[in-house]
Image (cartoon, rainbow, N blue to C red; front, side):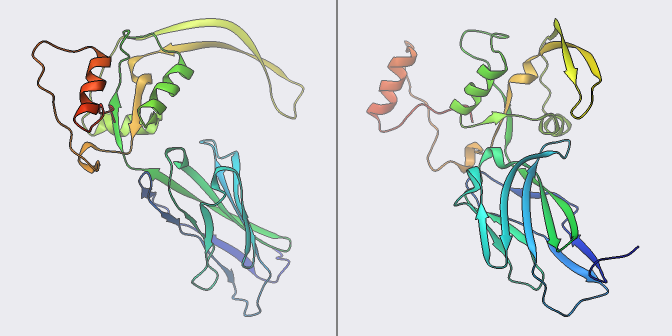
Length: 251
């Protein structure tokens, strides 16, 4: 193997996931070195990207050359490099958001040499089921996403659901597979066309959400109003406001 710089560029990130929570700051570690070591100072370009589950790029996060960097999209104003150590390219994300959960690629570019590794950022939270007031099985995917956002949460991923189930969350609702029309699929860069029998899987688990605010972490107290005669939703809202509070969300 011939390396353009006369040495092999190696990029290293943690193999274990990095955990954080909503609103916190998190550092995604990334370091690089050469084999054999190069003493001369190199002009390095560093690029961080957020990846989809299949490791394709979802969006650019940050690009840096030396001390100069540019952050993109939702990461603008929240992301910067941490270069305290020699040959460090760690990414710092402040005010972590629910949608920041996922995989990140740290890419180091030295001339014609280009190496990368991946960091897995996981948000700690509570997976919980939610049933809308008008009954089960009445939300499509986009409606479920909107309901989650209204509760300060996001739709749980398969991995989050599986982890919650393995930790004792056992929630079962009937589901059904509804076939839809066949959709043509064209592979990118290929003239071949395939056909996928598409459908929607309607299950209660789809409406389980991830909230990063556990009840004991809220800056306040959850309490009950004693109204034996009962209240409508609007009456409950006004009663909460009268005592200086607000109706608690599911999360």
